[in-house]
Picture 1 (tube, rainbow, N blue to C red):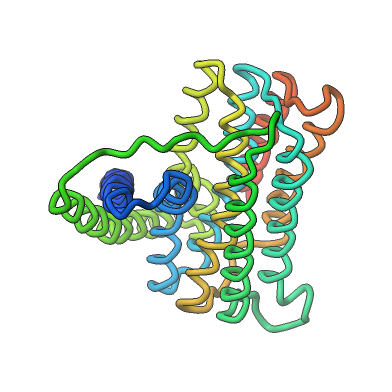
Picture 2 (picture 1 turned 30 degrees about the horizontal axis):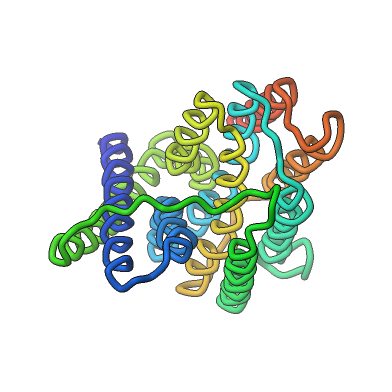
Length: 320
């Protein structure tokens, strides 16, 4: 039954996110909001809605380990598994701005999360917790990142990536409103089912919610990004993967955890320095592979190495 809740909840979340994105984008277009703004806000929100829904619902249910584990695990999965699988299919070329600005920013975001979540080690406190103040600080960083993204996207320098036109469904207002309402309902109920299923599986297997969050939940919420990146690689457009991963990772830390911790403080018991070290290491590995060996390219061999690193980390979690 717990597996049915988990799978059914994930399906509802994905359908809800897609419906919400289509409806909100259609309404925004009717108010003459540009494709650039829609792409960088509504569509970006839609792609990270699974992580946001699961983490917020987990936070409200008092499952801090599941909320944080979902984000940490999703980012590790994105950096190692998605980039690894994509590069194993076809080498990924990285633009100069992504290598010198976005990936280092992703690395800094991972370090910031490590500092926020390790109160015992850093401040000698009794428990690890991401409090409301830290959550609001993460949201402030998200607003800065969003402003930076707008500024870079508007410049569109030659030789760098361009923001593609966002394909938006043309729908009547009433249908768009139904899509938005239906999408929100799907996200709310899907999140409830998914978190209940994940918690039930953790109890049934006798493992912590953090391990379920780092593996099963993280992999489930990241499946859309994996599918999109693999399809892009098969269509000889692997560069899309690096942008999706970096954007998703920053969104997860700054916005998803920022929102979750601002709603209610996130108590962390099951995650330790190893998990956060792997999070930082996965972002660092992505940067170093792009910087050295074959400059600004992640090769097939490096992709395989990244996949093996993820397998090794998952094995460690299972053995732990």
